[in-house]
Amino acid sequence: MAQKPSIPKGTRDFGPQETIRRNYIFDTIRKVFHRYGYQPIETPAMENLSTLLGKYGDEGDKLLFRILNSGDFLSDVSPQESFPAAQELLPFISEKGLRYDLTVPFARFVVQNRNELVFPFKRYQIQPVWRADRPQKGRYREFFQCDADVIGSDSLLNEAELVMMVSDVFSALNIKVLVKINNRKILAGLAASIGYPENLIDITVAIDKLDKIGLDAVNQELISRGISEEAVRALQPVLMFKGSSNEKLDLLEGLIIGEDIGRKGIEEVKELFSLLRAMNPALEYELDLTLARGLNYYTGAIFEVKAIGVQMGSICGGGRYDDLTGVFGMPGVSGVGISFGADRIYDVMMEHELFPKAASESSFVMFVNFGAAETAYCLKSLLECRAAGLNAELYPDADKMKKQFRYADQKQIPWVVLAGETEMAQNVFTLRNMADGSQQSVPCQQLSSKLLEIKQKNQ
Image 1 (cartoon, one colour):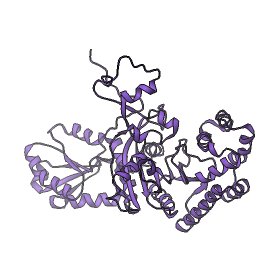
Image 2 (cartoon, rainbow, N blue to C red):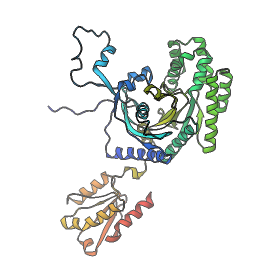
Image 3 (cartoon, helix red, strand yellow):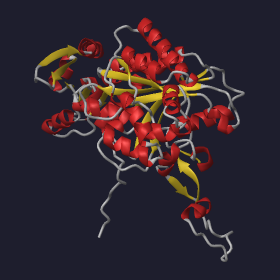
Image 4 (spheres, rainbow, N blue to C red):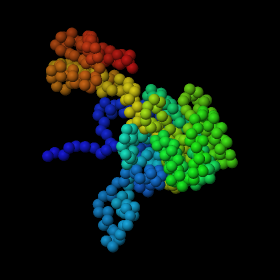
């Protein structure tokens, strides 16, 4: 009995239509990256575990996909040795893992190639990442990230330009978004103001779950992480406050008096907002004091982007990291970046029917095949169409016209060219609109220019 084919949970196949639409998203994002001076790089799917571990927090480390060592990985281990815990056995079993994100591999890349790069270095990557997460709507175990980072500059102009890139990408994709902004220095100041400066990571990991589990559950988690009930109560004004961005800044200035790092965060937010007002007064953004982003490496501004009117998590996020390269032997180099979640963007665009019709077309025109003589008659015009930049194909077999039309319909090919004995005698083609069935006669030498004119008019 043949084995029933399947794929791992949390992964997906993409058919032609889905792939065309996904490439539309990637191409749109790529164009914006180029417009702002970012250059492409690629890194391997797998990294050494020593590169990945300890960069994402305890919860992130648990989501790393580890790759089993090849060969007999216990051959060098004495039979007398015991392994009381799986953690001690792990180095013998696995030394590599699939990348969890693109930022840590980027930091490793920068350190390894520092002598060949021009700083500030602006790079982008569009590649898949893997996380051993529980699959659910909008959350997959294999998914693409589209990252843009600039490293080697402390200027907040970089943060402002990244937010403008977010605006340009989602404007081009016709997705209405809200950019949520916070600063880890503010969170550090709050942690210090309630008496727990050393528990910043515990506090940010818990706060980052507010949208998912609610305020009561966040408070319980904070207590379970060793934060006193009194300190948790002191955080409530921040977690519950619903005012404007300016009102939130006023609240913060009253809460973190005397905390230098917190005041530095407030000043950075004010400067960033000033830059954004100058660059795009119509941009929708807000200061979100509950935005924490649980990853350990963020040290300054942090961002998340929500699609307005869609029940889904963030579709883009990022932030400032001051010393990510330090763990690889290159300290004191600051960077900031954002990551677009292509899979969630795809789901939003499908839900709201935002893909343009052109993003669903594999071919713009198909030539019907009536036989060998007719095929020879069509070939020159077929090549002219392709040379003009049109996606064009000739049906390979002289099948019944009904079957060929069904093929064009199923592939959503909008135009079909017919050439039988009558057309060949008159040196013309019959051009058929598959949407309404209307037909027109077009001279052979004018076919490619006519189709190009139609396509440009409908774009």
